[in-house]
Image (cartoon, rainbow over all chains, first blue to last red; front, side):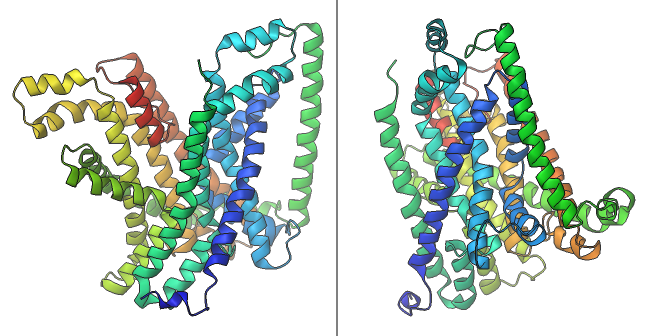
Length: 224
Length: 296
C-alpha cells in the first residue's frame, strides 16, 4: 500500500523541507513585520497609528489565497517582480514568503497588542518617570514583557502559519500540498495512504512547535 | 488621545511628531510612486482596465455576483453543517465516559492539526473515486467537506470552552432538580454556553469565508477568486484592477462580520444575563479553553 514511497518517483522529504523552509522564513519575516506594525499602532504619531490600523484591518480580512495568488499573477506576471528568483518554482517560493509574511504579520501584531495590554500601566509609568523616551519605554520595558505574555497566542499563530504554507501550492511553490496534489492524481489507488503520509508529515511539523512553545510559555511567563 | 506609553506631547515632542509624520509621508509617497509608476509602465492604470467594473454591468452579473453567490453558498453550507457537528463533538469531549471522550478528543485534535487544503484535496479525490457526484458539483462538495471537518473541530473546542466557562452551580443545581445528564446539557448548559460563544462563532465565519477561496485556486471551485481568470481574459488583462475589486468584496464582507462579532461581544458583556464569561471573538479556541478554565 505504501510502495509509492520506495519508487523514488516522489521527493517527499524534499517537499516537506520546502514547507519547513517556507514556514521558517515567513515566521521570521512576520515576527519582524508584526513587531513593526504594533510599534506603529501604539506610537505617538497619528499617521503611523492610522496606517497600522488600516493595514491590519485590510489584510486580516483578505483571504490568504487572494494575497498569494495576487502576488503571483499581479506582482510576478504583470509587474515582473521576481524577487531575484530564477525559475518559476523559485519565484513562487519567494513570493509565497512575501505573501505569508504580509498576511501573518497582522496576526502577530494583534497578538502583541493584546500582550501590551497585559503589562501593568505602572511599568510604563515608572519608565516614563525615569525619563525614558517612547522608543525606550517600548523596546526596553513594555515589549519584552508583552512578548513573554503572548508566547501561547504566538505559538498558535505560528502553527496556523505552518498549515497556511500549503496555500503556496496555488502558485507552484514545490511544497508538500503541491506534491500531494500530484500524487493524488497519479496514485489514486493509494489515496488513503497518500493522505495518511501527508497528514502525518504536518503533525510532525506542528505538534512539536506547540509542545516546545507551550513549555517555553510556562518558563517565560512574567510572574506577577 | 493619551496613552500610558508616552507623555502628553509638549512643544518639542509636537515638533518631533510633525517631523516623523513628514518622514513617514515621504516614505509612503516614494513607495506609492514606485508602485504607480510600475503599474503605469505595464499599462495597468489605463482607464479601460478599470471602467468595466463601473460602467459594464455584465462583469458583475456574469462573473462577480455568481462567484460571490458560490462563495457565500459554500460558507453558509459549511457553517450550517459544522455547527451541529461541532456541538456534538464538543459535548462528546465533555462526556463522563472515557470511551467517548478519548476518541472524540483524538478526532478533534487530528482535524485541527491538518491544513484545511489537504482535507479539501482528499475529499475531492474521495468523491471522484468512490461516489457518483457529478463533476460540476464535486468542487463544492469537496470545499464544504474540508471546511466542515476543520471548522467542526474548532467549534467543538469553542463549545467545550463555553460549557466549561459556566459556574459549577448551574450543573449542580439542575442535578439537584433531578435532571438527567442529557437534560442538564440540553436545557441548562448549552443554551447559556451558546450565548457566550456567539462572538467567537461569528468570527469563525470570517475564517470560513476566507478559506472558500482555496477551492477556487486549487480545486476548480467557481467562487469569487476564480472569476479573475475569466475577467482578465475577457476585459484585456486587467489583472490589478480585477484583484483590487475581488479583494475589496472579500474585505467588505469580512469587515462586516468582524464588526458584528465585536458588537455582539460588547452587548453580551454589558447586558450580563448569564454568569458565564463571554468568549472573545478574536481568541483562538485553545486560548478560550484556557481562559474559561482559569476564570471558572
